[in-house]
Image 1 (cartoon, rainbow, N blue to C red):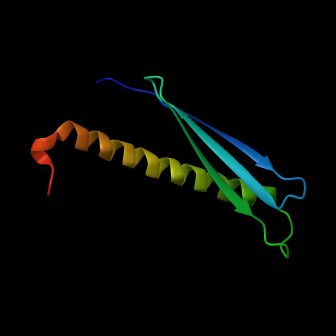
Image 2: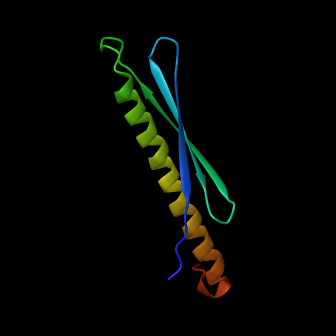
Length: 89
């Protein structure tokens, strides 16, 4: 069995007021492909700042976007492999 390894890095940035957290998730595949997704979390002005919550929400949203992109890429690849014989009209 062959094992492959993909690496994801998540970069978290908060604005100066701790109101908005931005997470950038970058996936590197073993074949050298790079995918990037971004997620944001915005603190309600009436809530006290808890940076960990913004980090979790923004990172989760970036990873969710990454997941959707990868599923879309896979579906496109399957469609291309199927060729014209499998196209529906």
